[in-house]
Image (cartoon, rainbow, N blue to C red; front, side, top):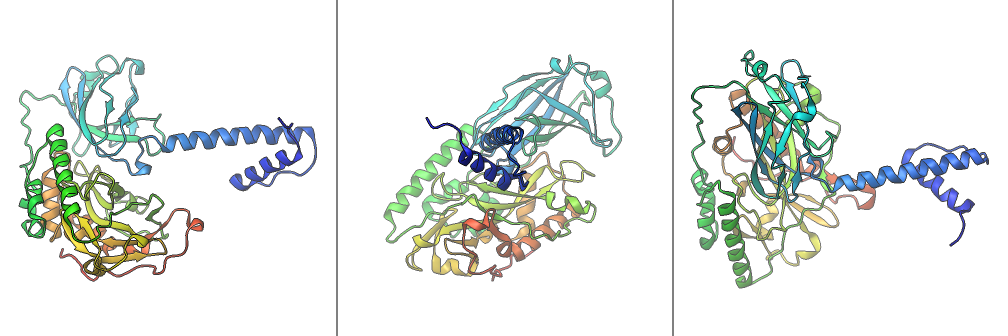
Length: 434
């Protein structure tokens, strides 16, 4: 093996300067060489750790959770976890208990005495995680009623509370003799918007007319639906082009901060929205013909409680489907979206972005025909969402802004690796009614 030489050292220095934008001293001394070596090793370890973290369940990668807590008394809390991601999540056995009004952590008597059960939730499934606080907190104090518009919430984590891997979940410790829970009336996509099922393939309509909250039954229905999709695709006289969802093509911050909700500070406006890559719609129905097909989905976050500034429940608003430009050979090739076939000639009017490699379409009209009934339907499914006219105005503002600007905001995280877009954005020809 060759020994370490000046060329090796210079290569390390070049990498360090490029990554840190720090110019290293060119003086030749043993101390400088040693410092460079130590710094380079630390840099490599840091980059390796970052690369490893990317593979973890993280909101920065578009992974999404639904959390709903119920206090069972005697310090026992059950948290229903809905894993909406393609990755498994493993919660760590640690939490922070916070009070909303003061933004302060409630100090435990002994952190190590908090116990967790069922912390691992597989991808695209739901489970109940149980937390025992009885030996760690003064439960008599926590069970005292708080002032109006105040509550407790957990901060949970799957990686030591680092950004993107901490999760908030509100909890009410006030015990009641009788707890009456009102569950939303089950609603199917067909019931919510009958106009949309009319254009679906007849064999596929029963899937969108069904509703279940049971994860096993939901999985079974999805598998049967995807099997039917594959059968239909084999019978199509023509080419069906699958959608793609490139990780580097995303919504780019253009430096402008729109105002979605005047009651929320300006530096938190963009936190009222979420961007996800999803295989299912707001009703948890498959959007493509396989589990590989995803859409880029822009959501509005709405609060779990009155007076809460940021959001906890999300309402999917803008659905963007992306296709490899080279795969579309004729305008008569088909796209398959949410139970229906459309030629790319028909899709042309919904095109919002195009570059050398990809073409993007805003096909939100295939998911709902009217915004307000759709939002009402989404909220009716959530027991953890607060909704009033102010929140409705917030959602309208988010919808209007991204409906008008989505094409212009699409771009690459690492633009130097890709060509410039042929068009900065297409103004949608169809605006959904508010």
